[in-house]
Length: 482
Image (cartoon, rainbow, N blue to C red):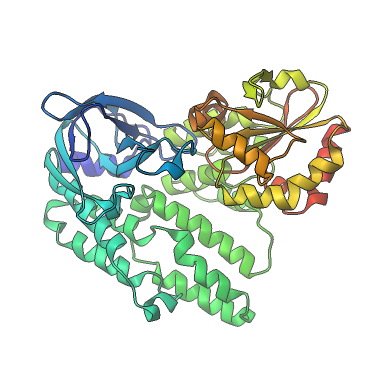
């Protein structure tokens, strides 16, 4: 079984499928008799694009929640509970409807696992961060492996740092990393080398934006020579000699890799150019890691020439999961018919995208509390709306908020949208509405330009996100005169 796990861990979804069953029994000490728990699981490396499965379980007479799932190949799973708005009234109607109480555990094979989840002493009722606020006990299938992840993750997150350590931007979060790896090392006898390296990679590359934040600030005042030296030092710090086949399985690493690439671009004075990065990746040697880098950039890198790179990547990559992701993204390509969604406006009237055929349409997806959405609206969209409103250009604003009252309040605040836009609401479904799941919308704001014929002219490219009103105005005018 250990050899089978390692082989599948390394191969992933790259052409080999093992059908099995995942049986989970969960207890949660804060659950009430009427509460449900949820199992979220996915076999894709890109759950932002291919949405995870979500199953519900009601509490049984013995106080347990049970899930039984047929799976094909390795999956990652999480346990969720519905947000209790009575404990935190301020979250009423927010975008997310669930708290995560167990996050992203690995499963490969067939067996029965019992998970006991308890709130840590001293954790406030409204606090629900997995690695801070919960303790876990595992019994059954690969219990020691799950325990290794739980305790090493907890050691990382709960370890504090001195001011001196925090100021060392060339060795970010070193104390946290050492604490997590020290716990992980104690489990080496019960882990395969592949399991150990993967959990280690997840610890090292966790939270890349936070890890690289201070270096990004410091680079601004450095000379070219100092920048090159600092980047070389950060690369040396993060080079732990982990097998590239293992790094290909770590989403933490892939996220770090992309953020590090962007940091190198900005430090050298170059503009962010995901298309240029793809050009270099597509001529490189094929591997699982290369496949996932290419797919990551196309899916999440705000590529300009979306349709072109989708076609190029499909002729290059071999990983089945990446192929499925790119196939699902084909609906985003320029020239594709935009889904004719139907949503409620502020008066409760149903509005369809096709109602605006003959006009160029900018669709803006946002949610209350989204800092990027507020910044983009304040610096760009508000000005462009005022200038182009009524000139055969329509602005459709779609909120991902679950609460109608929260949505209406945000409209009146003029922080995210205004009365110049057609304001639409997903009826409380939020991220799970078909318009979001069909296009894999998971980052915000997401911006889509639809031409007069109802076809996609620009799907969330980097150009749309430039924080200059004149830039967006020029894009919309160009598309509207085609």
